[in-house]
Length: 250
Image 1 (cartoon, helix red, strand yellow):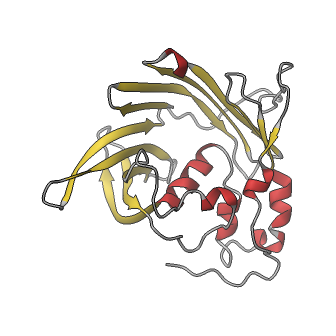
Image 2 (image 1 turned 135 degrees about the horizontal axis):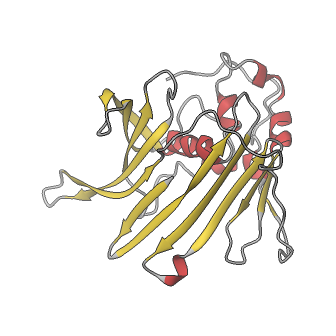
């Protein structure tokens, strides 16, 4: 994984690796190294899930964060067994790693164009183009974290537009190869200005299948940690789901 971001005369580069096991195990691990033009931006960021607990360790003396994934699953009741009738269940369970990145993109941006073709590396891909939303999408999950993504007046630093590149071949279907974030500049005549690239995230050198040690997805809380921030409630449904009706597709 690589990311390069620009803000004024500052530049931030992130490099790391991401592992994910399939077949619904929920196991993933992401280790990133942050290196910026300012010394304070240098750090390591780690996220690990064994399928039941998701841990995030941001370094810099920040307390580790956890999410009890089983509690979120239990809160969804029977809808997790009916993905066709309740596709929002997949959104509720997209916690951590690439799954949550795609969840955030879905909520924050309205997707209005899609192209099928080949990228600069010759890979068969889909490219989706989106711009900031001003209302919640449907279907949607209703949690605290989702509510923070769609706001009437987002921070000026939030990219206004995005281009998502997904795999189109059979082996890596819908794999997120690349995310390009842009900001739309204002023009003097009031018309939309040009798009300025702010950040690019790339995932390449993909290896599948992978083989890892038995304890690879286990996390040990640092001895120096004074507390643990529990974020489980941020991902819990804000409304009861026991009698949820069919989702609206749009």
